[in-house]
Image (cartoon, rainbow, N blue to C red; front, side):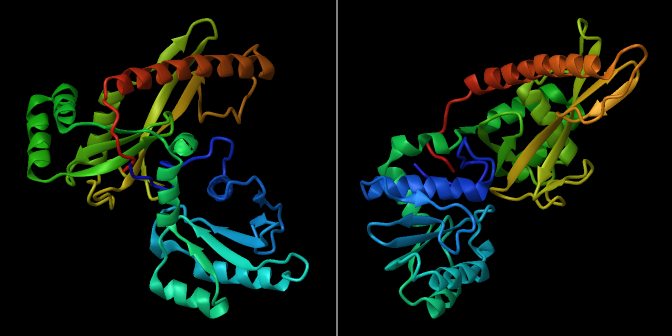
Length: 325
């Protein structure tokens, strides 16, 4: 089994910030491997020491790279943390200083770190993935399940979602050239491996995904007088992609992590609001603000149950992949 130590593959359910999640994860595994419960997180300001093992006088600095790319490791930040830890060494004594990072850092970065602290201990990605193998049950909750969508399923969906002439064109593109992307939805807790063609348009991918998951269309909640629907987007590298661009033009390549982003849209009496949180409630006719808010929240909750059930039905039809990669 392989482990990816970055979102959305990696998570700590109790934490919303990735840096905090990484600290919690490291603290758990360090206590496990050392058969202790003495390693603990320090509250800010950490002064260059995020975790501390007092009886052994070991200081740990946790540096996480959210992209999971070695080239994004910030060596300058790590060096500043080392300097801070050295400054408090008298009041917070440590014999060993350990850098805990979720990537395998480059030789250049390591030389810079050792120029500041020659005896630094570096625990990179490979160290933590080995511990994950050693403590499989303990880390199971920290990784989303990866499901593979087979090419045959993509082809069948293209046949169902598009007119005959256009579906033939898309299948031709898939036969000519294809690669796998990792797909994540903001509405589900799974990650999918999906074969796509570089010359698919972003809009094509959206239509394929909508057909895959069979997410609900517009629904009017009669009891609330609210109509709820979904808007759909493809997000890559932090940006929504233009529908008319090809995946190649959008920069999406082999093993890219792509988010299928859906937003709830609700309306009442011709007034439309977008977003999962109700930020804007105005007086509409004889309805007061509280009444509108409560009914909108109730309608969206019912609609979200429809979305959840659609993903559950889809996931149940797929065979879990044994690898998290």
